[in-house]
Length: 163
Image 1: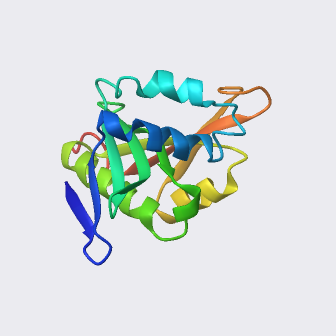
Image 2: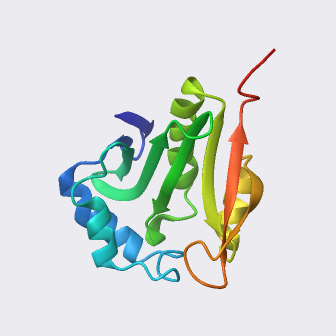
């Protein structure tokens, strides 16, 4: 557990099974997931059990789950952020930045790159990642739904090899 705001008793910790309903509630009420057609049934398949072989983090504010992140290690000389979500009622408070910063500190201790994807229609997420120093690498058209692209993002601490 890592405290991120002692005033609000905010911690980042590993996800537990008892967090599942709160996480599914966050994701089913959030864009882009609603627009992409993800349902509670889809999320239940992903989170029952808690994803194996991934780092799955919860952002907990005063005992309430307000954020989720899933990281796949060892992706292109770094890690891949598979999912980052903040409860719609908690956006704009810096919680997403805090959760992402935590993930970056772990990733960059292991390797020089952190990758993520964002839907091309998700202007708020694109702006968020841009503000955090991510560069858009390129689109993957028709990746999740027809007519839209997922854009691969990268933040780097430098090349994989330093000759």
